[in-house]
Image 1: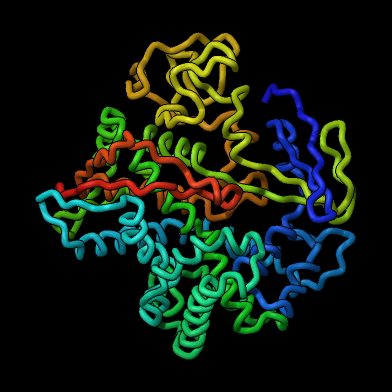
Image 2: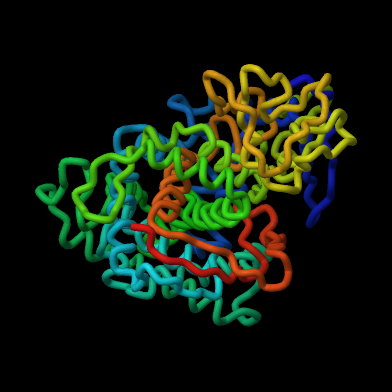
Length: 502
């Protein structure tokens, strides 16, 4: 990356040393290491976010075998108790195989059906909050694409209750006891009870003959949920409550539902304020449409859609600006050498994605120096930040040392050339990290990308949307209360109006 490694910063938190890792070279070293693990953050999340019973925590806390096919030489964990290996194998297999595409098309079909039932015509309709609209539109299709129709069918309030958990997650992060937040605990119990009810129904009613050509079935939903239950139900220490906590955690984090949906909002919100970029995005979407059997509902070629330059750049810029991920790693069996420093065995290292996403020494802002914000400062949304032009050496996401300020306005499209712009992530391994990095980065990242771009594409194609000026100039800020927990929700409501285009 060409940057000078920064010394890790040691802090004492609750009688425990925590080393903050900064600088792209150091971060890349953390991502590339095969000896680092994420047991602490997994265990903490399952216990405090999703209420895994204490009796079930042993398998998460003691599995020091790693995620590789071969366990760490110092580990004595039996093969059947290698939770992190089995869980990773199942999840990565789903999100990197043909099931990934079939899940995306399932989501598209479900979202189209949801839109067909909206009471919105060709006249303008006023709404109080764009984020609320996006959540209500996308949550049920996202859950059903993964879990099938029975989960929400048996607990109709599940999608609504899911966002109550999202609102309360800040308090669970602080380990607030039940007596201080009884309603939050009750809301979470409703979700866990719904999942347990669904699990019991699935075990009673699933038959192999119900599996469809794409691997999905109406009982468990996706092959991922079916294969997870097959493995996890054989682990002695995981009872019905622990299995429910597992799937709630998957729905909340691993599938990025609580992260993708806020990102869809931010992408819509920002591009609506940049008419030229929004029109370019619509042109890319139109070029990715395939024939639809449903009148008035566009069908997308997802591979084509997710390869379009501006759509990918706007997606990447949305996550750069609005994701705050706090990734924790530690070395279970030996000290970890980080540049010139040695991190003791068992000590926690932390990487904050937002610090890296705002590093002026790395990112292109159009300014001549790192101290010159240029026309595209890092606290502003620039949809073309990740686009590179063959005839413009100052384009692309990385800062050029000989770069001169750009003359274009913030909403101006990049200067075209014969081949058009190219989306690039080259050189960003230690700088862009909304999904973490290395071998332990989020396995659902490709699904998240498809979900975000596909959702934006369908909404932008189906509807005209206008933001309503609330007297604040549409100045909407991310809610930093959720720093470190993923994609940040908006702090303010965003009034708007919409009408059907098709």
